[in-house]
Length: 124
Image 1 (cartoon, one colour):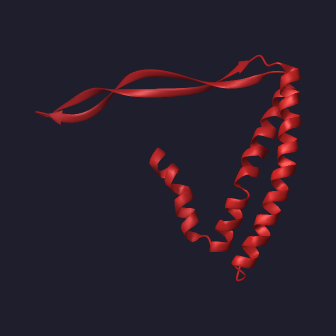
Image 2: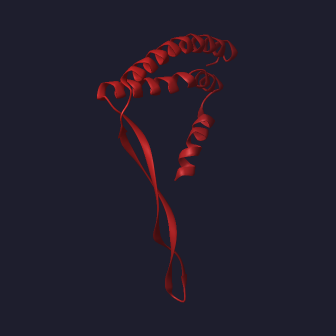
């Protein structure tokens, strides 16, 4: 399942035109920054943040058969959960301001790059 999810962007890229790929690459940083801005705004609004905690365990799963009997093997299982954590509100607000400034700068860069994409791939 995880391999399928990881391969999905490659499959979608195979269907995209060169212009669409160029534009997507130009906007990649903006997408990351937008996600971080949304996270920071959510943290400030809630008053706390989240971190991911992973727990590791094993479970018995069928892994074969011998003499008509099912053989069970211990299989590792990783569980992820979001755990609330305290945040420094002043630092979170400063981080948000910095992200907003960075976004404005990256937006200007992306706009210029998209214009170059249009020139490079006029067929769209």
